[in-house]
Image (tube, rainbow, N blue to C red):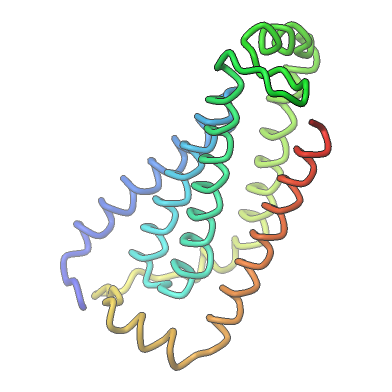
Length: 194
């Protein structure tokens, strides 16, 4: 599908990029884990839209869709933890999931220095990656010329690419195996803590 009106594409790309930056900053700043996962989900969603408008249809499937599934599954896991820890439940095994134990856990939170470090370290890490990305891609950005027509891939083109190029399927399978392994490690470590 070819779009001759570059103004529409460029404006939509600027809107999508601003949404990507807003949700990235919100996911860094937010302390509550469930809200952090919601902001991360929208960050990956708008990143996928941006890849789609650039014409990188493979990146939409390789990076954005698995990352969205990953953050959505972790969001559900964190939400389940919050719901069950707030209720006044005491299991027969002696584990206490009551609000009293939750308040005790909140009292053991780190001090101002630790919480400040929790904000500063991700910001420094992300700004360092951004600096390296901009520094290493300056030659490419200088030689980049805007085309007269922008071609956006249709879903039939994506399906043809996925079913003809098996490397994409192998990479998606590897990402899914990685996600399942992290998921199982998290569940096992939480059960050992209990």
